[in-house]
Amino acid sequence: MSVEIDREALTITVTADFPVPPQRVWDVFADIRQLERIAGAPGRPAVYTRNDFRVGGRSAFWQPLSDGSTLEGRWEWARIEPPHLWESIDENFDEFGEQSRDVPATRIVGTNTPTPDGTRFAMTHHFLSGSALETAVENGTTARMAHTADRIAEVIADPDGPGLPPTAMAISDTMIRICGYLDVAVEDAWRAHQDAELLMAWMFGPDGWTMPVIEVASLPGERYRFEWENPATGERLGYQGEVVEAIEPYRMVVTEHPIHTTADGFISDVTYVPVAGGTVLTQLIHCPTREQRDELLTTGFAVGFEHAYRRLEAAIRAERS
Image 1 (tube, one colour):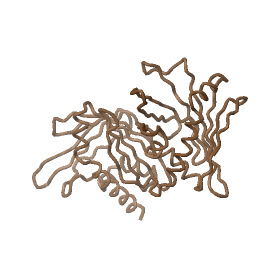
Image 2: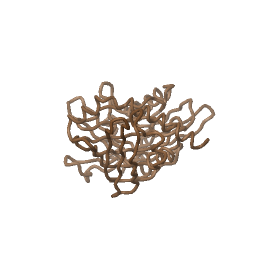
Image 3: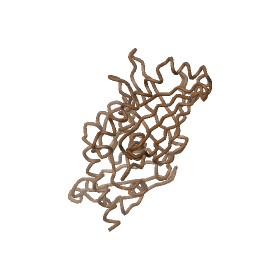
Image 4: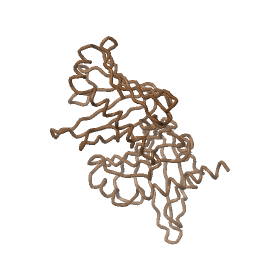
């Protein structure tokens, strides 16, 4: 592994060789859980709230600092050529959350080049001026880039890779992140959430219940409604809402309001990211209060998602057979 400062080109580049195909290195940046593992510092891990890994998509994280404050970062993916090249534009924000005019955005380019022994990974930071480059060097950018390369080596050595069971965790006072791997293509993962017949095949609620209402919505402004019923008692559960944003087959943001209860609604933000052999699905649930967040987490719904994912995969396989 090496780090090179090119003051004429105004760049800093870290280069490392990994004994795996380019796709495996690519997936470290595509999978929000793996990306999270290469960021942060010892004892102060970064927490990713979004990784919309597509052209025009954005990623965001927060990280506690040693002085008790919090570092927040966001960037836009400007170029995506899987599994060989990505380009991002780091966005700097002022104290009011607006994009800073004083600190210019930084362009970062990552490449995965096949070699006889695996992949040569290179990540280059491009600066707009010599003073900006020197400031980055003084602030420890070279050490952080070397740390990133070391962490990538650790992550790709993990035999589980993306195929971990779904996880549900609180990532802020009012936000829950659910993340899991689906053994289906991203287009099928998207369709399984939009096609009424497929939904019936895997999202059928508690054992023995029926799903008498399936009203799907795919475009901003459209409304959806799902209801389940216990045939023995007539009891019903369900939720409804409106599509806020839809970018097929990568992102869906909706409002979600429980039916037949007095519980508060929330916002669900789902991203679908293609990785080797399947799709990483990440759902962010924005709750109105910490109490609702805690109530959702105590229901054990991560286990429910794992069962639902396996049913979804089976439904896609049955459709293709």
